[in-house]
Image (cartoon, rainbow, N blue to C red; front, side, top):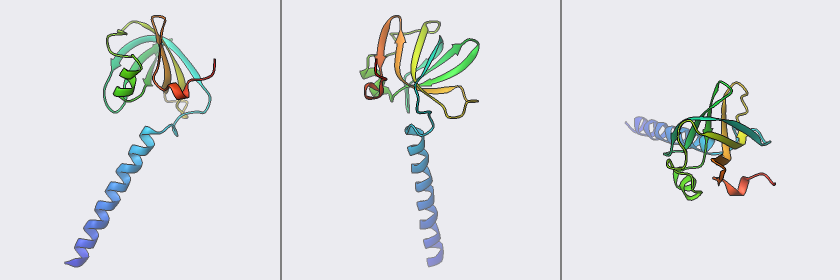
Length: 127
């Protein structure tokens, strides 16, 4: 019986470690390129929720996913669902995915209607 108990504890520890590793990888910047990338297009969807706020953007016929900060940080930057709508022109500045086949980026700055929202102000590129 004791062997089963040890095996159960080891299995539980492995599951917790795997979940923590996945969460760390998801929330970090390790999946993005170092240099800044600018994406311009039209908003096709807006989501302000966990784990990150997102915009879906049509850029020259390609569907992109633009990840922003967690909801509280995105809203604190002034970007809410009321400041933009589907069809609005948007510029997203940030870091694109290392996987060039993946149309995904993590934005540090969003510009909609001439207004700038720095969702990661500590990472905004120098002017």
